[in-house]
Image (cartoon, rainbow, N blue to C red; front, side, top):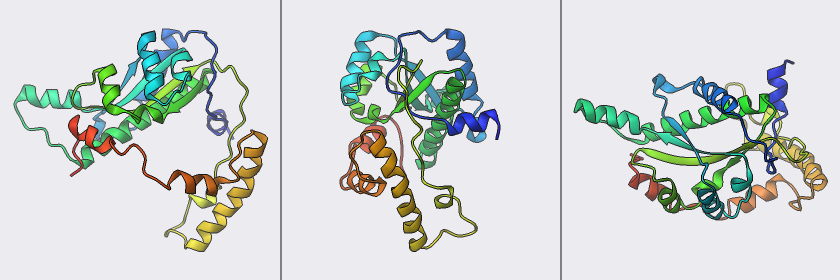
Length: 243
């Protein structure tokens, strides 16, 4: 359709990178692109912490569940929801700073849009990227490493670099499964869309040496148990409110 849509449709996660450093100009261009993402009421509740210390990178490999790419990639960013600057402004003016679930959600949404804009910018320059949800595996341990103050909430990591592997685009569920007119469809329609997708993704799994039979099986297994159950308590300790 156009270059932007084609770029978005070609996205795939990259997990092996060449050692080529990323020029500061490219990083700053991506950050500026990230900052132009939509932000509710212009609150800009996000931050990116670039990890350059190799010792810290190795520690993060352990904290993210052994993801070696966190240490190997040329650029690793910890993406955070950030209301610290808002709270400091309130304290300086000696006025209250209200905090509730809405405030936390705004920070999460802002940070995610910021990061996705950066990803699109990086990929337009020829870099590969990979989000690292494992950054939330041990938030207390992560806090010890990053020293994030109250009101700064690490959400996920981002690896960036020149790809050192050829990967194919992973098929997504069909648009008809996520775009609806006026009302949400009935369960039979949901199942029909999922069954269609299972047949498509099963072929992709086999072609890429993934033993999971289909998407349904993968999803059922993923949600058989809770994950990262300590996150809520840690975020509260770090100043978030879910009221």
